[in-house]
Length: 106
Image (tube, rainbow, N blue to C red):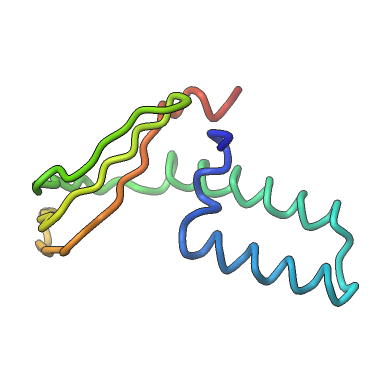
């Protein structure tokens, strides 16, 4: 998986991909234009996270699985507690994918 394609595996990324696939199959979009939309989506997500997100969250949980492959860390936590200044939330299982943001600009 290319580092720049991280956001395509998110819920919004999967929905966008499904919609673009349907539009290509219907002839509404060309495959090249659909790829350009996905690339722009990745760039926009990266920019938005760098410039607009100011909140900090602490995460505690039981580490079930972790791996490091192609400069991307993947963690699977069970009974994870997300805590911010405003609230806290417990999640049964969460998958966290992280990479060095400097790699996104390459």
